[in-house]
Amino acid sequence: MSDTPNAPAESAPRTTPRGAGKSVPIFSIGRVYTIASSTVTQLVRMKTFYFLLAFALVVVAVGNFNIPATPAKELSMIKKVAFGTMDIFAWLFAIVATALLIPKDVEDRTLYTILSKPVRRIEYLLGKLGGVLSVIAISLVAMYAICAVVIFSRESLFVAAEYDSMKASGQYTAAEIEEQLSLIQQQGLRAELGIAVLASFFKASVVAAVTIFLSTFASSSLFTIIVSILLFLIGHAHHMASSFWLDESGNSVVVQMMVKVIKILIPNYQLFSFSEGIVQGEAVVAALVWQMGGLTAGYLVVFLLLSLLVFVDKEF
Amino acid sequence: MSEPAVEVKNLTKVFSLGLKKDYVVAVDNLSFEVKAGEVYGLIGPNGSGKSTTMKVVLGLMAASKGSAKVFGLDSGDIRARNEIGFLPENPYFYKHLSGAETLRFYGKLCGMKGAALKDRIGELLKLVDLEGAANRRLGGYSKGMLQRIGLAQSLIQNPRLVILDEPTAGVDPVGSRQIRDLIMRLRDEGYTVFLCSHLLEQVQEVCDRVGIIFKGRMRREGTLDELIEIENQTSMTIENATPELIAEINELIRSRAGARVVEEGHSRTSLEHLFIQIAERSREEKS
Ligand SMILES: Nc1ncnc2c1ncn2[C@@H]1O[C@H](COP(=O)(O)OP(=O)(O)OP(=O)(O)O)[C@@H](O)[C@H]1O
Ligand SMILES: [Mg+2]
Image 1 (cartoon, chains in turn purple, blue):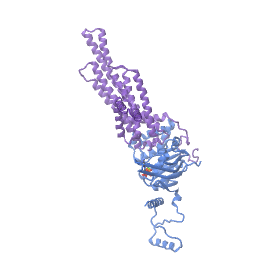
Image 2 (image 1 turned 180 degrees about the vertical axis):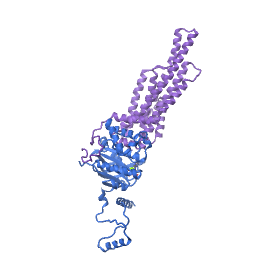
Image 3 (image 1 turned 45 degrees about the vertical axis):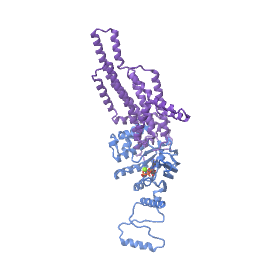
């Protein structure tokens, strides 16, 4: 098939060649990127990043409370509030944004126009996930930067004040002063805190993948949000829940198999909780970090495949 | 060169409604072809299965039975979609994007980029007369403007086939005129257009061939002339006829053996006439 030869000469805005069966790559990163970046634009234009402003205000406010506590305690409190907020923002945003965006595309028939272009459904899902996760990553990095500045400035203030007062009293040896200062520094800005942010991000990506899976068959955003939050809560009591059910089902193989499947389908969010220890100044256990990374990747693959299974044959 | 743009064969689409026993037959053993280069109109009342047929052709839905092909490719084939531009009924696009950004988004999805894409966007904005609104967000577009940006979006990768689901629904007469002119221009430029509507006069104006669909079944199909012409009947349209003249004519006809006046009255759109006839017939069938 070639172009229609008798098209009027002056008309024809014809820039691309036409031809049926022009090959379409099996998978195109370019299309995923296009959908992801449009999702980022959408979220940015929904004024998502105003949240960062609110976050900065909270952290600065907490940093400037004059509470009667030791410097170490105060730093620890700033971190608790800041990293706690970051964590909640990440998973809650993952659920809400994912649950709102995909059903909205279906409702507005925007999805018809997207899928009637040469776009594969997996590319659409990956693009949406990528967009939501990019916004979360950017937000987390910005929030981390904000709290790093606050923590570092408080820490250096405390260290300088402590050093001056200990020196002035003249009762302490250099070693004792050193020890006291390192106690403060342990609660201060340390590179390990980055691992805690990473844990929040990984958790949010699993949450987003679960939400995408739910929204491929749920009929409303509200349902998706509620079920995702429920799974999130159950996932935090994973050990308790699974040991409870496993004990109960010592009888039949079928029930045991079902419990195993359910155990996989409800991600174990307890995996990520070691980051709370990191925030409190504990040492990082490398094995836990690797385990977290591996399982996150595993969950992402499983839930994306499940979503695709539903989404590929979905009719709109 | 005679490969049809769209080929629908014995297409049946059944929707089950919750319970297994309850179902709707939206499209019932439908067959038709849209030839390359023509404007084909599928007309039928609300709920007759027009949109469903289009969605199957686009691969958004699977057929329950039968098949749909686009330029010889199975409608589920992703390559077929390179050749199709689609404008859904009452389309919404991302409100947060401007007109030009919307076209860029869809162009990139089709693998276009750089200067070629930029030129194409410019051309299309001009074609649909939205150059002035190119940088405004779609949230502030009127219904007619949305419909036109939707049409531009469907043409972005220069497909051979454009599928339009009620392109003039909800658009005022002037806007609807603009859209019809655009469709005729597309035909002149060699595009194949497959549209559906229930606005008969408009279909009559732009379509080369028409299929009339009722309750998911094709009732009549053919070129406009074929459909409208009734071979052994002749109609006359007389201006300023006095009652005396009409009586005289009637008298004359009655005096000839075999001839009779089938119908008398003010002339109306003939396609509409046909449509209503078929509607009445299918209602009789039912009762
Ligand atoms: N997703 C669906 N689930 C169940 N029934 C459906 C679905 N989509 C369409 N139908 C039914 O199929 C029939 C045909 O619908 P369709 O939308 O194709 O009609 P249409 O000709 O486009 O009508 P309109 O002119 O109102 O757009 C209707 O009875 C409708 O209720
Ligand atoms: Mg319809």
